[in-house]
Length: 115
Length: 111
Image (cartoon, rainbow over all chains, first blue to last red; front, side, top):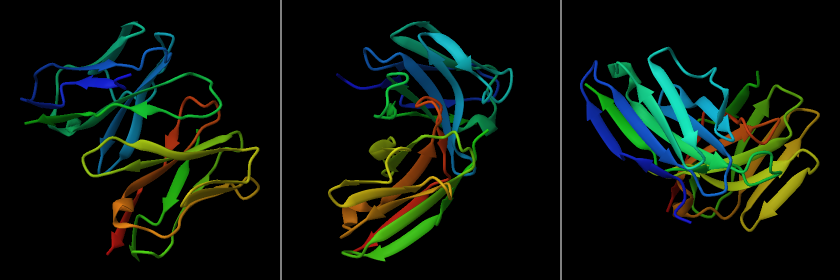
């Protein structure tokens, strides 16, 4: 398995533009998580899905952020409009929900810079 | 919700020495505690985990201990090597799903 695949690896965009981050979880995993990592706030859970259904989006900062999971093999995180304070590394992770061990497998992340 | 605190924030040791990183959690319902290692510019990777029905777990040079009564758990790395240099994160979960992460410890192993 290729692991969790995220794209793009790097994104530089201007303030006000729409940004879409993509994630392909590990085949067979039924939970998917979006995290944001910054020096100031560490790893923050934004939203997670079980069986393609959003379970907890309490970490989504504001209405500018939205996430979808149209099927078991694909998810997107969209920021519209983007702002400089959204600059961070965004990680997608997947797991087999409710398994007793194993934790998450993280993707390589997308480094977003909003100028 | 759960609150996980981690210290120290930075730790510098000499190669061959031991390193200990400590975490506390607030939710007594938490029952799963993974540890992740993140090298510079890379993704966090699971290195060891422990469930609440176990007090200690070892994997070669790495061990994790859990004290449920005191709500704290620790990562122990023995015979440290330069390649152990990284940021280490602890986490806690009550459902093996939603993890609450600590703020991270930057470990520097000096050759």
